[in-house]
Amino acid sequence: MKFLQPFQSQILSIVRIATAYAFLLHGTAKFFEFPVSMTDGNGSVPLFSLFGAAGILEIVGGILLILGLFTRPTAFILSGQMAVAYFMMHFSLFPFTNGGESAMLFSFIFLYLAAAGGGAWSLDKVLAKK
Image (tube, rainbow, N blue to C red):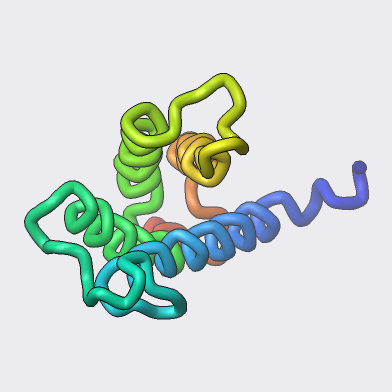
């Protein structure tokens, strides 16, 4: 699709922002029960737990990626987080059967962002010009 080639950097930014927004919501669900509760209405996950650490990474990492700030190192860390989540919680031959497809997709999208950068609409790009 050659007609999309001139927009590669903008499309990369859209993918980054949309993925980061979805990822951020996983963190807010863990701590603020928004937009849904991940604890069946029992309050936030314990801060000093694996779920708490994941929630912090999801919120902080999601915000950084939405802004396109420190995109490559943030995406690399989040890719690793999602790989660990997949192998600890969701590993199976068919990840769809146990909810592992989102961890797998997040991991590979973040790995791609770590390699490709934040795209045209990122603070990384603005700061690189200075």
